[in-house]
Length: 628
Image (cartoon, rainbow, N blue to C red):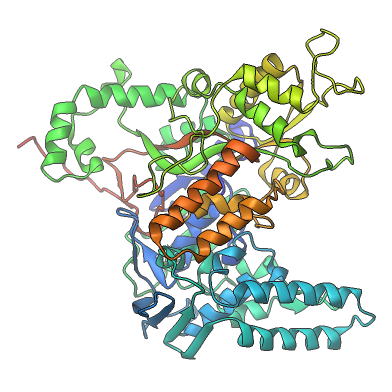
């Protein structure tokens, strides 16, 4: 899933947002988060969207956010055929939508069909390509739409006829069957070890088709199915998760309350949850300190390393007692809450938590032959991309710029995060080799002015570095990268910070040369990272395409032996991070949370970061137990 940060606001604006809502009571739990883009399950890909979706929607499976394993969701049970390809899910008969309708197997089937339509323009369509016939259906619909546009007739009747044919083709090709309202049968091309993990992912959540249909039409010009975003608004959106959406205002936040019809395992523990997008990182800390919010879900203030050190110092002074409580069976938060209170005069804190994440911080290279301006793109050459990668001192970035000493990354899949998977070496920091790569690509300082030129004497074009504003860490890294590339390679860089919504659009259109990125794994398999570089993948903003790399991914899909499959994927990643380099990995993510464990519970520290908003609760006047 994508990482995102937002645009800077004046401090007074952020505080006003939190203090001016006198007309309604404060939520039981309030958290600060990046602003949500969409509540359309099939169209989301950003972490803040997925976090809220887990509260509003429930899939066939849920995911235990302590152990990271799939658990029953709408499906109470399932069976797998002897050949490992056919899954039969049995849905709970009492599952209900917020409007009282039953949740049926047909709701899942229609949602997955929608995810497979190129019309939806979903980032995660390929998650379903392991289903027999799914890839063929997507290709057929894409070709049919192209033929429709090229045809002579474009009217409502023609669009309806194409849609009717599409429904027939889906039934014919795609092995997703709903023999009755409580049974869903899915046949895969090959056994997939992480299939249940996918069934817990929010983009595979069901949709209430009848309510969506009111906001959907066929475009007679394109033949496409188009859905208006109005179906996801409060008072309209019909969901099936533990909570329901009662308020959502752009850049003002959203409010969730318990879904009284929910009958699953994640029944809400808080009477209400409010998600507030405080777009300036320092304002978020001020709001937390004032008591306006309970949890900062991604602490990005400029001084966050100092805050983390203050928390570490307090915990270190009580390490023996902390270890004793953990050994006695306490959770980390329970143990922290039981320790003596921090001494503010000594600069101690207990409310900053550094959590290792199943994610990688990276920058993307635009791999298109031409830039959006029409100019030749130097980053279309893998030698240039490798040169820029080898000119980065990542250890200096994590020790002196971020100051959090995150594990340096030379691979996209976090090293050691997946059992049985051997990571390739990747490229190391090597300025000499970086300059040799640039020279091999024809970029040499021919005049002695410190600027590299091509054979025609034209200087390397200024490197357009796109990033989303709001996170000081990102801008600091961008400045450091620009300095490293200037000194090592003789190129000039131009930083371009944009609001998240507009930066996202630039990424889609390829309007960048180098862009800040990042990815948190969605399921426990290397493909959750490697698929980002597959040709045509919805999250492949770089437009990278490599036939050998794609072939390795295809080979891994067909391989039935688990260890041989992982070995093939390791070779695929080697091609990415040692030869092609469409993505420059910098470090493994660590996430900083800010909350007081003596006041708030239910926030997981699992690297997957699958927070269940429905399970977060306030500790009311809980006595601090004495050391036994």
